[in-house]
Length: 327
Ligand code: ADE
Ligand code: ZN
Image (cartoon, rainbow, N blue to C red; front, side, top):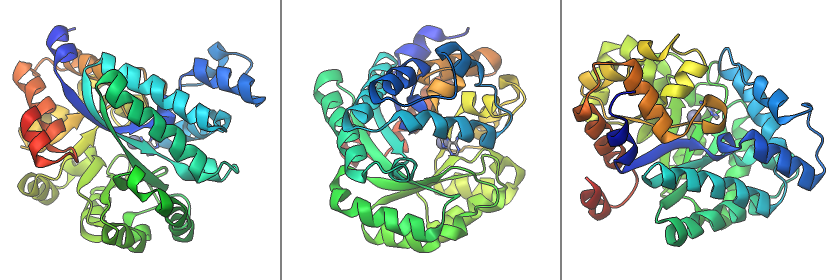
């Protein structure tokens, strides 16, 4: 691997991590036992062996099955606390964590249980790990607008526990336009807004996210390079792209890491940075993403590493004063 010490040691922000995607097979089995949940896999090894994905949906099916062991506030705390420890070890000093409440409320877990467990870990990370952490509520785009509004309603008593909303799950066939009114309401509430777009979906979905949802960042966005006008727009507005290299290779968005377009995104002057997406499923946390990316793409130098770290802070939702301190 190239530049490993620099990549590991540099302070960085993580802006695209699904907390349910940080649930390691070991913890899945531990929580299954603790909660009396029966898993369709006989062992940790058998579960891990099922992590061979061909596209986004093949991953999501297993990801939602894994989340079925999360029932109690303590389970959500344990999951988030494990992730925050990994983040601290990778010199992540700030993280904006996605969570999918509908995955849990659909199983009868109260919204309150989810948010209290996660919030407890977030607060402990500040004092215990020196990691600044915030929560972003994601709506599942394969579900209806009505269900998203109902979720927002359940979340409102906990409005001060999360800084924004996002849009995730199955992209193709569920364009941003489906959630235009939900996002308008979220913006009125003063929430930050982001959306997954251009991971498997076309560049038109990125345009829609910007025009209709008025998102401040695009999650993934790697397919923007197919649309020169879109690239120019993203460069001029400095709309960040939260890119996830290991995710993109494991979900076959790119055949191999050597085919990843992150160098081209940076060359185009875009505010792109590295994130882990679902680290328990895709083979590693932040530093593993950096190390495999730089190992596979020899044109990436220390200058690029610095730019990626800088972009992560620029794209974060921290105050301007904190941003200046990090950049
Ligand atoms: N949920 C968890 N990870 C996701 C991804 N990479 N794309 C869409 N939805 C997700
Ligand atoms: Zn994601």
